[in-house]
Image (cartoon, rainbow, N blue to C red; front, side, top):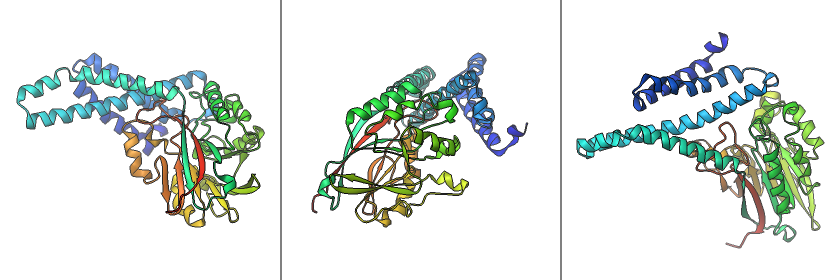
Length: 376
């Protein structure tokens, strides 16, 4: 009963009840159809109220299947809500600007069209998500770049979110794509896992074969903190991944050096150590910072970094959140942007979190090439 009365559960219940009432009244006339619509709503309600408050270690395979179904329902109801709102907006506009019979014609087949279109959007989004990441190549022009690093290639994996949904075959396909790129450096910019070491250790095993073996660096995202961060730090290191915790490593290449810094996620503040770009700053020279949350750009740019690589935003993942996320993370939402003299690249996620859906965005594996900036 305590779970049902906490503020989060009460707000969630109110929002779901309001959304259900709107959809049931606007789309369906029969009681049977309205009762059927209640099933995915209840499924969504159960997950945060009961499952997220329990120790994930006691979750069974059945629990995980139910969570997967709930995530799919979230995606479908999202599209159903958006399309219903669009239909009703069109209906209101037709009343204002068109003869009355046109409004009737618009509404008559409207419910069927909305339901079919929402299912099409759901299926398409899932196909894109499970299709795996595309490789995106981007050139970053660095001022006064040492000629030794002109053409230096960095492969970035971010927000892989290995879980009961994204499993070993997906991880292996990502590793195969990275290794085919033959990059000089591989970086993993947080939120690689969504669960405990015990649950996911076999799923993440392919990460041990990332190449080049001597140049693989990882930083923590917020989800590593939710999943048992100390255990994951130890396990990532057994896979041969260099974990950067508010520190930097000097990388030698063609007789020159690059200082690669990595900070912990702001979620670490609750455990006693938040991100410190100052501690991760190397000596003079080429400086690159790995920071999961792009909001750290403002504090990092004045320190003298040339490039910051981030993730976290998922670019909103699917419509309409790919539009809403810009309100929270602008100007560093996705892709290449600039903060002062520092370049910022935000990877939209190599995997997906929650609903396994991508619509309006795609999973991405980024290949960044450093090039010398042309004189202005």
